[in-house]
Image (cartoon, rainbow, N blue to C red; front, side):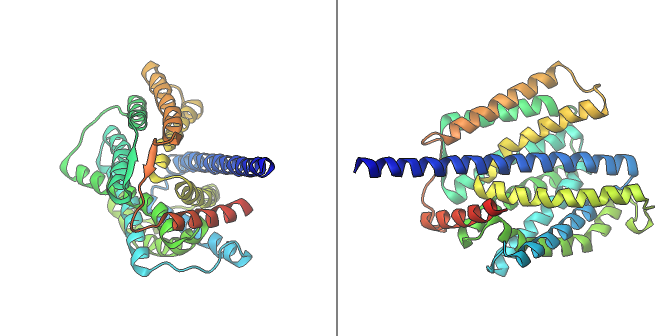
Length: 343
């Protein structure tokens, strides 16, 4: 009996170690691709004048669609179904998120845009509490506040807002939070993996954004994408952006599927810190000062605290939801993990 207990403990320990390794790999994959695409897009728009953000996102999802078709052909994506109603809700939220964030950036100051992005964390918490009956411990709540404080110190500068800018930011925050919530929820509800969900959602997103994107970009910038002067270098940057976007989209679905939207948002601000650091390295150090460094340090402390607090018993617990049974959640996550490990 003692030997059997020891074998069970060893088996459980090896599974936990493997899960930690996969979680870490997924998170690093997301950080590298997200920071990479931000730097590439910054060069593409600032240096080569390709300011058509919505259309570019449509191209990103078109490239992602090609990737999912290839994975399906290779057998990494199996046959699965997603109700049309759920697919439409997801695509609607995702597209409103993309357009809303672009419009918010155009109509608001950088400071208010950063505040809007920070507000996605409490909104995501609200959605989990109301829709999933999640309960947070005191330490988990405090760690989230520390992250918000640190990121706001190093990113929020001038804050000015107008009525239409506030409306755009409001739509962007709620649609983004809902889209990220749905990534985790739909995987559990329909027992499908990250790749399967992306295979369902990428094609309609690509089609709708490529249809609406040129009109939206013309409305925002007064520039037509068909009048843009394409060069070999700018075309290479567009291609590189699409290639990196495949990894960004894929890693986002993997990370939110393995964690939650709130955890993705909290730890996701590590990317904000890295982008600031890389910006100082490659684009000058004029923005680097004491309060920015202090803000970065406070944010990192908050992220480490959140990781420890949320992983403790009672740190972040989901009461059994009538919509998604606990056994169904485990089945869906196991399926997702098996496919991600193969990749």
